[in-house]
Length: 141
Image (cartoon, rainbow, N blue to C red; front, side, top):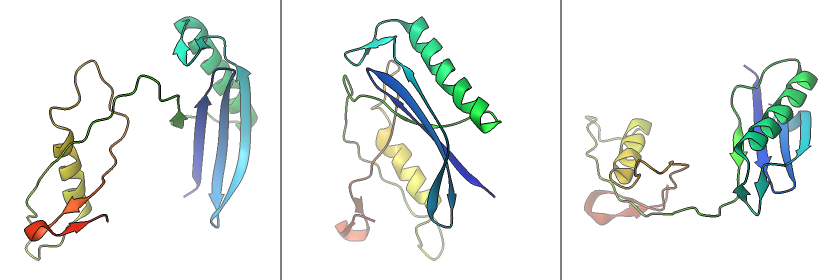
């Protein structure tokens, strides 16, 4: 299966989109697009309509170069007005052999954000800082 990734950078001056493919642990750039930003000023959206038009133009340009539609991408945006919160979650490991699985990790990450993300907020990412195991043994992995 091909590993094709798209990344979008929304800046005050320009919006940049790059699409690359991983082949043998090397990134090969397939297409790029850059359009001036007209809907953003000082990291704030000043015109929603212009911002959407700029984004559509950037994607359409890149898709025309690629010959296929982009359905998902990584997005980089300015961190102005972001809120950061530290949460904590706990789950019991239910497997018979007491091996922690990816499902256990996902469950504890979900528990760590309960009650933190309000209806007027958007969760962007969860970054674990430490995992506490049996009898308070800590691990960063």
